[in-house]
Image (cartoon, rainbow, N blue to C red; front, top):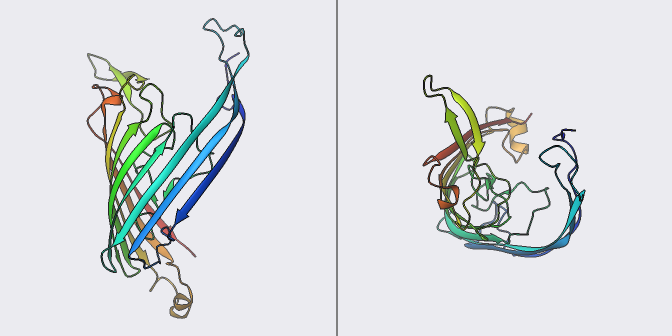
Length: 263
């Protein structure tokens, strides 16, 4: 019987325990000259995974396999306020090959110091903390409560060059085209190259315009502290590294425009 995409294929008992210290760095309203954050999380437990059917469709000898997991992850960062409008900073994150996030995370935060929540591992790459390390540099600008912008650079590596990474926004494929018509015949996902750790690098730009005055009655707009509407551009350009092989396109980009109106 063919498997259903919604079939449950794993069951586990995992525990996460972590420590965190920060200077209220994720509160965009704070006016500290120096902000920092540091976290260390450990994960351990057991997981059972259902084995797939054999190539001929018969049941495997063992219905499932069990794994003991033991991983850790850390996230460090510092941000310097140059003046009331400008900030710069750097961050580093690393997760071991067996570490997994619990699935409740968005990986977005205000780490650049603006009201906009920016993806911690790239607006294009959108990685997770699993067999991945990243180094990040960023600058941000905020004009009163009307505009903000963040420019972010990321560099990504695998921790173990022979194991996969967690889910992300990159899908490297080998396309097969018809020689006569040029039509796409098939696409095959490409695995990461064994022994290659360089996942790539990315540049992100997130720009937001906030609106309040004029969209709400004057008396009401003065009593509401949050903007009633915003327009936000999220863009990222990702350049694959050696881990994706030489046949992958040189650049990949992703861009979104968010329009939000609270009423």
